[in-house]
Length: 298
Image 1 (cartoon, rainbow, N blue to C red):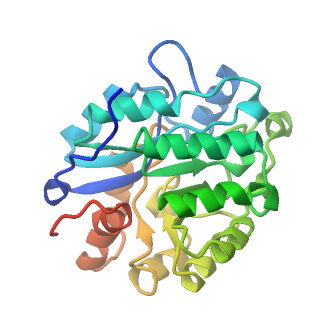
Image 2 (image 1 turned 90 degrees about the vertical axis):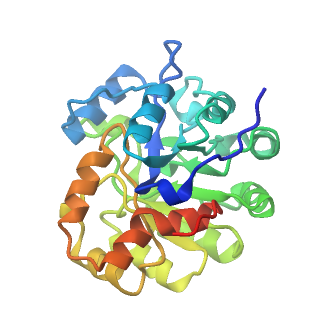
């Protein structure tokens, strides 16, 4: 086993994408079943490959002189199917450490075993953070049953990345396939941010329909950041764009949501926003480099 250690030439990067999904392990196993994959593809109206391999994703970012944070979501309890292996993702990233940064995922319903596995993923495999999708994983982040997990991540000094707001997974299906949006209200993460002040938290997506809640949290709490994935910048709420230019310019992170939203489209639409160049640099790369502790000089 090879432990992941980043080898990213930060100064050579044009951007760092904080949100890219691994949906297949390349051995015929997928993170979601076909019905959910199809519903997600229809929601995003994308015609691109919905399940590129990690190797394909690494090549895509290398060609663009970008790097990316990559992960799967362990929703094995709710979905009733095995998750992709975060251990395997981390080991595969070690072979592409010039462009990929692995985050792990654990199922919060697994309790003490999730805590134990999170520690192993950091210490043994070198993951730099964890992805959580409260709606897909069907859990309330503010539930104190999950506090041992947040405590462990704070102690380990890694990032907790939470899906917030609307999700394309289950969209358009009867009952949304049982996926409950209320679990992804960012205010449920506010308890976590308050009670674990040294845990770096990233709220993923513009949090629609709770965009103002995420903006408020990022303004109020030093340990809360926002990634801007899952929505083309041309659809960003005006208050989000205003805050990105000004008060929260050091808290905003470029994220695409690959493979459902590609980095090329996101960046092209972001280019059209009126944004001072130093702020644009922070959002595309600088803030993520600092948060991930990757160094670099520009």
